[in-house]
Amino acid sequence: DVWACWAGDGAWYLAQVVDTAGKHVRIAWTRHTHGAYSSSEYLPARHADNDDMSFADVAHSAVLRVEESIRRPMPASVDELPVGQWAHYLAIARFHGPRLQELHTLCNELNSCNYETWFSDAEPALTNVASSLAASRLEAEKQADSLGDLSKQLADDAENIAGQLESSCADINLEFQVVQTERLHVTHVVEGLRMRQEDLLSRQAELAKQLADVREELLKAESSEIELLWRGGG
Image (cartoon, rainbow, N blue to C red; front, side):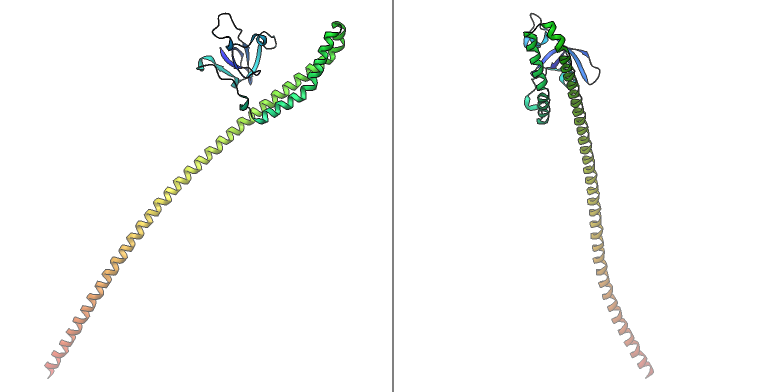
């Protein structure tokens, strides 16, 4: 058993899956049996007993397995449908309005005239109206399928873009971390060179002082040597 959403009121009712081939799921509405726990879980008899309503083709998203649900799904809210879809359905209703009025007029004529005579005259008109309605229904289903495919494609594109952005952000963060690491390394190297420069300058000053002392001692030695030579010559 499954829960299926009936488009007539947006509520979910018990049904059985007949066929799942294609883009739609064909279901048969479960008939209410005497002694059932809740009659509200079954499609009302005024609809379920109608031969045209005993089976229905619904979207996969409008079917939910009973064992996979904790409770009966909540009815679909009118606010959940986008404004664009309502405008689309309203345009379809306005398009079929004259045909429905024509069909209503034909039905009134059927009630007031001899059935066999009227039917022989009205059969071509009814056939045309039925064909037109069937064609319009197929066109509406094609448009709905196209909108569904477009929505899925846009969702996939958005997911791909989000993935690309996430990947790009990760790469940028990684590059930033590498730059930060290199910056710290360069700072450490510069600090080491600065300390090395200070040390060399200090050693240079010390060597300059030692050189001055050596020069002074050398001058003293030369002076003593000249004095000794002078004394030896005298």
